[in-house]
Every structure is written in structure tokens, then in C-alpha cells.
Image (cartoon, rainbow, N blue to C red; front, side, top):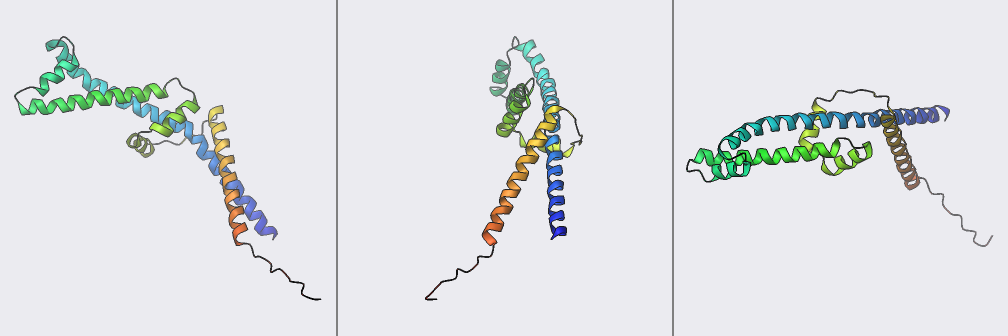
Length: 178
């Protein structure tokens, strides 16, 4: 019984430590996610800037007029390019919104934003190139502890529920006419 109890305590501590380390990674993931969004945004700005030069030269700087000029052009290739420009403009706006929602915000606000608006493609890029670190700042430690405590409580509750469901029920003795 002592060995089983010791093993249970050891596994419990390992689980807690693992959740703590996982939780500490969350602020680091947010930083790397934000950097990835920023890089994509800079790339989109660079590409859009080329079309802006054309708009400046031929359409008094109006990108919507440039877009309309492409859409109404007689040449099919130029009409098709209108969709490329439109998609690039939308992507630029989207990335700018994502970046604005993450910059200069507290960790809780960033987490809430990502919970509802995470870009799966970008998150996968971040995870593919993720570099693990153990930041020892207060945010990372607090997030790690909260995650570890919550995960431990959930596991203990589930374990208790399973034990409750499968415990052996002792038959009730009927006292008939003793």
C-alpha cells in the first residue's frame, strides 16, 4: 500500500510539474504568435506598397480607384489581378487588426483575444518553429501555476468520480426475523 501511495503522489507531482511547464509556455507562445503576425503584416505592407505606388502615379493615390481600374479593364489578366489586390488589401487589414488586438495589451486580454480569434494557420506556423523557453517572469509563473492547479483539480475530480462509479457496493444485510 505504501508503494502504491508513494507512486500516486509521485505521479501527481509530475503531472503538476508538467502542467506548470506547459502553462509557463503560454506567454512565450503569445509573444512568438505576435511576432509571426507582425512579420506577415510587414510582408503584406511591402506587397501592397507596390500597388500604392501605381495608385499614387495614376489614380491620385486612391487604391479603390486602382482596384476599379483593374476590375473594368478589357484585359482578362488585369481583371484577374484585381482579385489579388483586393485579397491583399483584406489580408493587410486583417493582420493589422490582429496585431492591434495583441500589442500593448495585458496577458488576460491577449489570451481572451486568442481564445476567440486565433488564426489557426499562423498558430500552426508558430508551433512548427516554436522555441521552448522557461521565462521566469511573473506572468508566466502565474499562468503556469493556475494551469497546473486547475488541471490537478480536474484530474483529481475525474479520478474520484471514476472510483465512486466503480467502487464495490457492499450488499445490504436484511434482518429478517432474527
